[in-house]
Image (cartoon, rainbow, N blue to C red; front, side):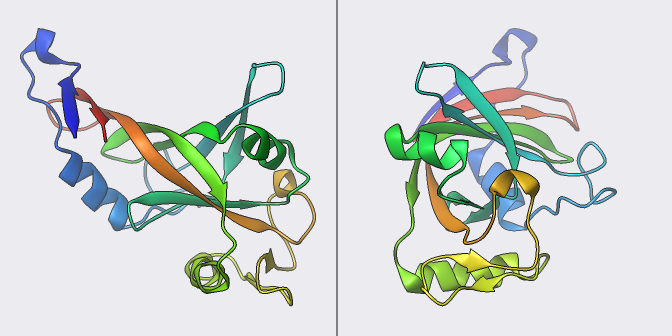
Length: 175
């Protein structure tokens, strides 16, 4: 891993990736009042066919050193990822703002889909559908489209964090 201190001009030490990952491992809810700037929002940026960015809110999870999101296969974000898997995701927590860049891929392993369904079901009553490869529920975010919702894994290649508490700091990591 390469680490670049973006706040050395202020004589601040680099942030530690292990502290960022440990905070993400504890989870972050998206309900108002649950922390961060009143709540934790995740924003996914994908690449449109014309090269312009497409940014949308998603219910992302951090598990096994990767971000996970779900969406219908006909949504713009899913079509964009299918055509070009490069994307970025940002999240604001109480301790830091984080942007990760990497590649997203459709998950086709029924065991992994079931595991993520169980993880999401803590806050959202979803379940694996009859195909075993997607999720269903009585509701989801309007931007997810109608069910079924497929699971995507975003493998992180780089990350940038800006500390929002303590003495501050900003660091970029390339994995």
